[in-house]
Every structure is written in C-alpha cells, then in structure tokens.
Length: 348
Image 1 (cartoon, one colour):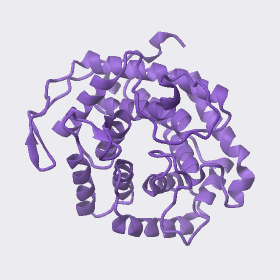
Image 2: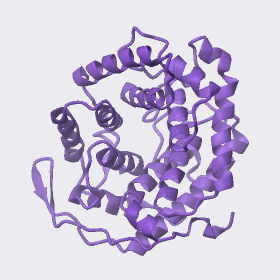
Image 3: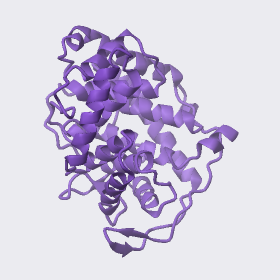
C-alpha cells in the first residue's frame, strides 16, 4: 500500500491544555502549549505506516502469533480506522488470519487445558485483538476461551513467562483473560466464567500492584469488572502520582521514562479511569510521546528481557530492542489517537 495509506479523512480538533497539574502531591507547572494538530497527525501517520510494515515482517519471519507483532498493532489499526485514518485493509485482514491460524494449530493443547507457549498471556492477547477486530465467535475462539476457564481453583490468571514488562505480570494476564472470556465465552462456559470473574475481583481487591505494568492492568481489570468507584479512583491516583517531571512514566522507579510505560498508562487512564484527554496529566504525557518519537515514526525502548528466540529483523528499528519498542509504538499511537474525537472523524 502507498505512503498515503494513513492519510486522515478529517481535520483534527485542537488539543486543549490546562495550565498546570498536581502530581505526587506537589504542584508542578505543566508544559501546556497546545500541540499543533498537524504534529499529532503526522506522528500517528508515521507510526501506523511503520507498524503496518513490521506486522507484515513479523508474520513473514515468525509463523507464531506474538503480542507485540500482531495483537497490539491490530488493536492500534482498529482505533486508527475508528478515528478517521485509512489503514492497509489487506494487511489488517492478513494479521487477523495469522492470529487465527496460530490459535488453530494449538487446538489439541487448548482442549487439553495446556495452551500454547506463552500460556494465558498469548491466549488473552490473541482473543483481545480478535475482539477488537470485530471477529465473531467460532470453534477456534470457543476452545481458547474454554482453556481460559478450565482451572476453577485459581483466583487469577498467572503468567508463565518472565519477559517483563509484557509477559510477567499476573495483572496483565488476568485482564486479558477477562476480556477474552467476556468476548468469546459460550453459553456452556457461562457458569465457569462467572466463578472466575468473582474470584478475579476478590484477588484484584486484595493484591498490591508494584510495577507500572501491574498498575496499568490493575486499573483496567477493576474497571472491566465494575469494581467500586472508590477503588478505581485509588488506582487512577496511583498512576497519576507516578508521572515524572518530563511528562512520562517509567516501568520501574529505577528506570527512566519511556514510551511503553507512558503509552500504556495513558491508555489505562483513558479507558479504565475515564480521564479526559484535555486533562493536564494526559497532555503532559502526549507532549512526552511527541518529543521522544524518532524521525522514522518509532519509539526506542530498551529491553530488559533475556532473549530466547532466534534473532530476526521484523522491520521495526532498534535491533535487539525492536520487540519492546514495537509494543511501545502501539501503546503510544493509541494514546495519541485518543486525543482525536470519533465524532469529528464521523462528521468528516
């Protein structure tokens, strides 16, 4: 598809900024200069083009479904299309098909309650992306959702990986599993789903979120399960107070701000916390993302996971950091996309 594949169909409304914000109990003057709509538009366009290129590259070099190479970009493409951007529909359909084909290869293991490599994380991300893509329930989604509720003893959905930040947090896996079973659970699975949701909420209410990844998906899961608003507000407060002076968020207190943490936090604050995009906290995050995007449309985030797969070039920059950076690109793009009104896109 040509470079015009992501031209917008609408003129974006100016982003409204507030004059200051309260972070961590201390009043800090925010950088509240309204971003030029063309700047935000350009940042999204460059990122979408790069993600489209690298999803194709990931599928070509890796027959398995991946969270960073398929799920997150698909979710991003759906949101971009909703908000007035043109996407490469052929590539989009190819990535959905790639996801389904991969799940189908694991049928025997899903029916046995074992799942594929990556366990609940892989299954959850796959179903989440399919649901966002508008895929209708079928045999494949039925046995994957069945796998997600086969263990009735567990309170949460644990991660069997140790590849932070994406594949380690039980908060991440639990949220994704909840989205998966609510999107594709069958009538026959309804009883098991109800039991697991009740146990999951109890676990969420008593468990401490320690890292940014935990806090992001803790908030999203609490909102999904319609937890008491007091608890949801506390989760929002924890994320607001973790914002750095540069406007971004870090994965850990000992790390610098990066686009993965910042984009995912803004996603959670918007989707799970109901934060408006003209909130000063959100605007500072947007400014950080725009300032740290590379000329090629990417964001560079350093990996803190030990590699175990054979190295290959997906097409996303930053070599050994390409996979986490690709996920960061999707989170950052989603955060920027939320500043664009769906209503305005529809009008155009």
